[in-house]
Length: 394
Image (tube, rainbow, N blue to C red):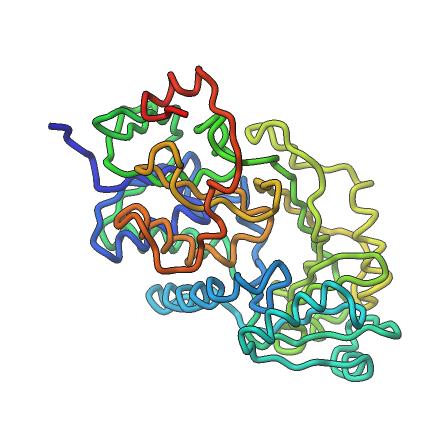
């Protein structure tokens, strides 16, 4: 009879893995997590001091129930730790009246009764003079939006999991995952661990651990940028909500000032591809900042259009820009989470619930079926079958 090290193993205790560990620990499920760095690190998808939390979701109204569950869990984690992680500033979605962007936002609002205001051009210009408002610019003010503190949130979710009985191995790089009839094995430099169930939430390293059998399309470098302002009082969270803006050919997001000196504003698109996640270039050339500087000049005149700080991160993208969350397919003992395509952090608590549900009960009540990995077609080579055991059979 196989002796297991815990009921569930979790490979990758970052954004999604820390939440999975927390949810498992709250249920009294024994779990061991493996993190090659430490929870809260800035060397992949999490980081940047602040991340958007949006409920009027332009990526699709079907996300709204997951976002609302995530909000409740973010607030619970904050209450459990005594640390404010979610700041509900409201969120401005600014664009041209009648644009596809605002139609998508409006659909989320209408279908789910999101608390909001619609601001016409004059109202937008009067209430938020920090923005340069053009003729035809309008906005939705989503009262169910704000920002999160990412590094702190990941670290605290992991520490809460440990407080409740979970075990996190820090600076423990997983070298191999093997699926045998007896167990799912996690190989590290220290030893081999065996579990009846495994969650793989390794972010951009997922394809290295499960080559050929996950639908990760590409890894994109994401750069966040901070700009100085001479009037920081105009950019505090009580007067300057988070925003997403598509106008004048620009697509940007912004956050209130946290340090009282700079404003974080960045492009919404990824910058370029990363060939090897272990070799991320964290020193982008100055020319890459031209577009965001032009956006600042055109749209946020109270901010000096010179980058004083930049943070470089990366995220895994799928072909349809929706994540894959669910059973591996070839072996339902393994649940995978990945490919969040630049908009996953806010959803992490709901994803942690889904992963914990699947790892313990094989099903979830949350509406996450649209993220099932089976919607992608992937190729499994003979070498993959050999590596992952005979359960990988098709």
